[in-house]
Length: 417
Image (tube, rainbow, N blue to C red; front, top):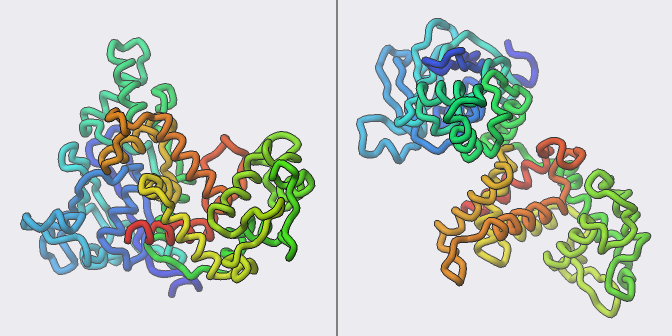
């Protein structure tokens, strides 16, 4: 009998064949997991980026050989069965542990074979996947298979190697990190489990609680709540008064977001962007030197699901199509915990805009500084909500709260429509 609040799970050891030292992870996943869901969990556990096709081969519980391919549409012109609809329970039995009888292949060019061994039964909290052990970082995407990755390790470990500079540049292009940061033996279980948790919430969404809703909308509700019936008086230059700026930073606990005294709106970017964003969302407006609630805001200023849905729609549907495309990228990165660094992030944005048909009027490529500006605009928009756990800026990647994840998942669902 499972402990209260838990469900039966597989205890899986997954190893990449041919790696030395061996790259492996031990995962606990619900017995009800499907093949596409298992694929996503393996991608997260090994740091893959889901750029390529995958296949699973197995002898199922009835002794039949199965060849399964994903995404499912890739199986249409092959003898393989599509991955959608196949449940891991069909292929593996927790009561019959032993040597690997199931193989997962990712990227048919590099051919990374993952041997999946059932160690036995486990239990996990409902709608949860956990990585309990592991060794060595996952291979770099498109490294050239076992041989290519082995050579990457050897060359990056030797600054005097004649190919070191070239390999370091390729590594930085692939990952966004400098070659000096590469540590093939390091595995960050905490980061893997943060990403598995986000993936679990995406696969098996839970209802939004009132507490989560209020926590995410807290900055919006705070500023809306400062508007008296006659409106909030502004300075002669049209800014929030210093006392309101200071109080906003204090009440929202945003000191970690911005250095300085935070008593002038024009010099306190988090408050300035919050006020400007509420205007852009048509929740407040300036009139005769005061800020007033709009008719829409008067109906929703107490919060609740109508305000949540209203803001979700405005995040998902900015006025410009280019902004919508970049919003989709940023939201996906935040959900997955996989925001690329620096130049690589801007390059991905610029390339995505060009592929979608957003060339510059001059006919030139989309410049990286424009891609950066679009990225920062969207991040500032999202920072007008409390989506992440407070952390000192620039020290750690932001970690989404449960409510923040649910907000972004709802945005993502609209962007996909």
